[in-house]
Image (tube, rainbow, N blue to C red; front, side):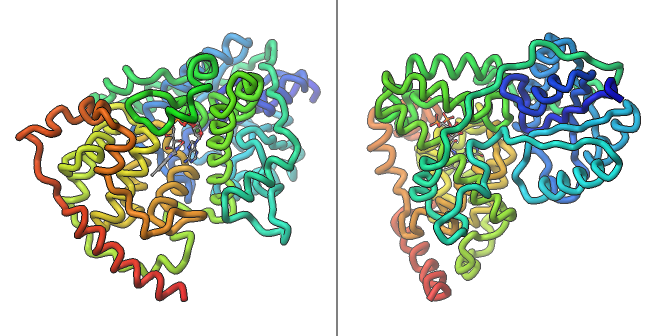
Length: 454
Ligand code: FAD
């Protein structure tokens, strides 16, 4: 029994450093079966979007290399995860299954049920905190309820214990003979057409690339982050979001890398840590409202009179052909590189929901399919934040004016020119919507929400 292996089930934590489940398995001393399950069949598990699949392929390749360097093998299996883990336990005679926690609703239900089942069978099942700095149930208001406003939430986090220091990767693990699928057979990469050229140029998935990016950012850009972060042309933000989304970097690694530089980072470091706080808050909100991607967080928004979907307008927005330069620049950046600067994400989301009067869920779905950092909490949370229906949301009557936003945050027009070279020329189409009139229509529609909230 002492030699019966430990299964480590990798999910959104595709790294070997600061991986508490892997560290505990290595400490157990028995052989370790490292497994990743591509689960596209369990009910309630949201299928990955195209850009996410592209990233996952690269990330699993990198993880497999890192596990091999420790002496193990990454076993790839496909199917309903509970069934796959169950059969892997039978096949390997594993005495223990370890994993790092997930916080989505269906995921938690699966994990809880599986833990109970394994425990009943005499298999040790243990879960660890690894993906959030603060476990969502530990941060509560004075009344014991979840927070719905960011600032007091983040203050409560600051009063909690400082996030722990990251754990080193195990020095080695003993592998087993368990085998699995070939990654290439999973078809995660696009073939015909191969739309991923821009992604390959923009990104390198994997923990090594994430660590290199973190080190560069802390050394070069952290001090100027506060000033530069809202300027899309500058590249002043960290671009760590996909590495965090896939757990190639842990938030503990990022937190402490920044804290150690804080004396040299000043306002930039403080601001950056607050942005990590928004990631925490998004997960906190999702933990307490698991259907955040589909249901208005503020119920009175159910009264919002969304008009019949204008498919042409939605397509023009998706393709960056609205005739509004900053919106089109953002949407083209997204299509080419599978990311978009945060300021521009806010502008395009406001334009979709308020100027085009298209339900935020259509935008959330498009981002889910096209972002490499598409994240169950941050995406839904931010869409609802912009739409006005979310926690601590921008008020609905705050309609971003894309022209003013461009003047303020892209004053030389550099970002717009990069993505919309025809902007300002005769080749530039007329906007598909009048910004002033559509703003007024949005505010009139909002009156229904106000009435429902009374
Ligand atoms: P930095 O400015 O360097 O920030 C550092 C880290 O803090 C980010 O990597 C991210 O993990 C976190 N962070 C920063 N801003 C936010 C925020 N507003 N909410 C939550 N976390 C934040 N972020 C995602 O990771 N996944 C998404 O699917 C996602 N969808 C979004 C949709 C909309 C409509 C909007 C307005 C924002 C969305 N964001 C999402 C938040 C934000 O735009 C990205 O995290 C950020 O642009 C990533 O770039 P960066 O790593 O250079 O960020």
